[in-house]
Image (tube, rainbow over all chains, first blue to last red; front, side):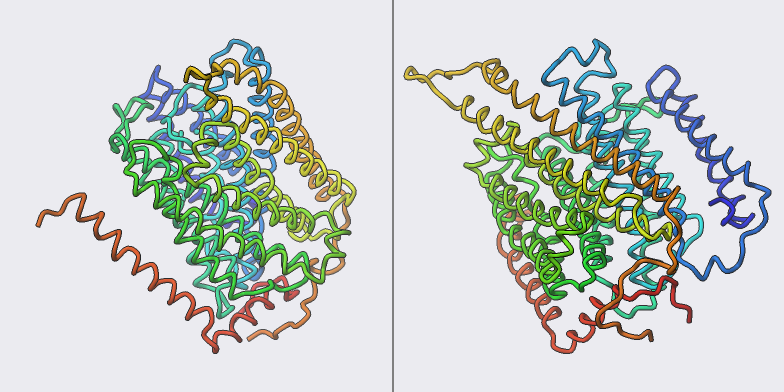
Length: 545
Length: 57
């Protein structure tokens, strides 16, 4: 991998890593006993390990000139590996925190392993670690193939990938140390947030420059989704994380947003993180890998355009449905509720478009678990967007809010939609990228599929049950007008569902581990494909320009 | 007239609706414009092409 960088590029990367290490040293020096100091040492350690890797290969011969006439796949391969690592890590922590809710002793009386610290480690690990790396890897793949152009940079893809993972590590190690901004899905503190801005702007510039190099006249719709993802996440991240640190030597900061505005900004961020991180980018995957795997063009390209603009414009207004019955002005709550219901139209347009693409290829869905992953993802996408619109309605929300129903809804989306489309895309991508004939074992893909489906269903049904029971118990009154159940009563009623939830999560984790093994064995032992790639034949191919 | 909370609310409750409707119409016109059909058809088929090299030129 490093061999494919010129000596000049190797020098620049050494220079960048030294700068990062100096920044880490400054954090360690200024932070001293503050957790910021520990975070500084983590930065130095990571920059140092990358430096060591580069120094080891520093005097390798210059790369061949021909590399510039092929696609740049090295960062994608590492991105896939990182994504699968984070999947196992994040899902393991998820199973752990789920088990803690059933058996609290599993916190082992340590501060770092308490529920409050592990829970953001789980969410950040799966959303940003697993999802984010998968998005970066697939976006690099899709933009090159659909633009018929190589990535517009040799170093910047690596900077984006490793810089992003540095952010993930800083965030998660910070939570375990007790650092948090107390903003859901945006818990990382100011220094990590500033670093992510630098990385993200580089990502955006790289993406735009690659598209500018395209040889195809039209920008394929998957790229629109990826671009919306990159651009909007930048805006959300910056606005929600505007904060003033206590001092340069402290990890702690205070947001500039006061009171209810802080709540509104947080949920504008939080819901659009669902919209643009967990939906738009993964729809980009859907619109590319599903047609490729099914060997059929997308059912309606026009519909994909309409639903793209519907999703980008409607989602922006939906965040306030997280704040029903709060100090937020009533009309803002109503606005959020209305846009959430309207969102059903573009969401179902995308889900329907995906399923109609499979019309005529259902025998392939039956035989090919990889394609079935994507089909199931589209179904779960349709189901969870319906559920989301429904739960955003104010009276429904009065029952569902603060209960496990919300948790179940999030996981219907995260496991059923996001993770399934990612696994389907990665199973399509891995043999293609490493130029193998096929995956190591189609049977293991099949096993993974059924573990994932069973895990998701067990999880979601457990949370539906427990959530609705919770909601009903909390609003049951006695004849005298007093609450019939105490909080502890409702907690005791949750016990069997919490065990079921941990089992569902465990099945899903087992599937991910099997996926890792299958991918590893594909790279290690499956013979190289005879053809240059395994992309399918187009039914109506259009010759090049 | 003061520029305060009520001004912003009044604007978003009136013109806020119209600009979104206008935007919606623009998107529809773009998606259904007859001469765009060929471009879209080509786009959706071209990802299925089999070559795995960037195009030179």
